Image (cartoon, rainbow, N blue to C red):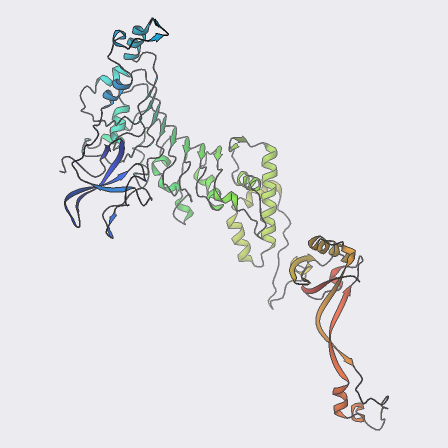
Length: 551
């Protein structure tokens, strides 16, 4: 059976393409079985597991992408490249054999159709060939394979998507027979970089040097490899590579591209999250020749990816980034929400040599606004730190800070400084702020405000918050302190005279009378509307203010 089927083999059954993933027995079932993964990920019944036992792994994450099949199936017959070409383009029938065409009752006279048919049969004037979904499989020893070069000598673009190619080796052997080929589309194939037993050893390396091919599209190949091939697996003259709709998670999965001369790299709709799977920035991949990068609709969630791009893509000029989660949940260090437009400005600021972002040209004004805005955000984050260790962490998260300071000057940074005894430095920004807890009925909220703010301004802030005219409100500050308050007892008989003969004035009163006439009340201070600063009412950095309506 192994002479007929092998793992990785591409087959077609009733028009549905599949890849053989397993050959062998299945528990509880007689005979041998083929475990296959369908190109249509909803076509199967499981994902390689049967009765709790895992037989093979699938490239797709779908729970219904695989099936077990008997080897003896009415498999669709594969075609050679020449068979497919002749079927679609090179008709052997003459014009006399064609069906007669009538308009009403008059027979249409066909003029020049024989000539046109002969020209098409010879592929004269045809430069683009589309042979997708034709069940093509190529072998170097296919019958009449040498005729491909003569028939396709003028072909510059070839689309053989969704066929039965199993390896890049057989694809490259086909490409070398098209001397003027510039663009190759392999979308939907499940190609592997490993040479199958059908290809002579070293054939992949032998045919990878196809200098005429400048553009290859390998979209939706379901990632048959864990990474792209090494530098001898891509044509030496390749300039554009499209790997969209694959399952790459890191740019480090593309060592073959990093070592090639590719200038345009398209990675749309993949699952790219990071530049490198390693936390060590010293092991970042270097894509020295890539000038244009498309990472739209991936899974980029933080700025680390863009911070590492200048080192990873030193020649990068054009970038497309829309559709990543990062831009939907942007916040400053103090959790203030930012817009997607802010996100694009911060992207520009992190990439000093970028010329276009999402097809829009980056002007000098755009760069000035983006970089000064980014610098101000870094300064605000540094001002919020209280130790040198925290400040160093901020600078590490923003590697462009030093370069921006050289260009625009270092911004004023007033850090929150904590003294040895744990108190806040009175000269710091934090010491000039007060944290006020407002209470209005059942509503409570907190504001952090400058102590220099006037009560008038405070009334405006609170009035806007509550939707009330400010001067209809009054502020009662609860100090948290208590004052003693004298009160009359029920048996009070007038004032008690002080006895000069006693050194202790309380000796003149019974002890129970002192307790009876003394009580305690919470001290409250009304903050009157005016230009007086809030800080003159508050001692310390926190206060509690009750908001009431004026009577």
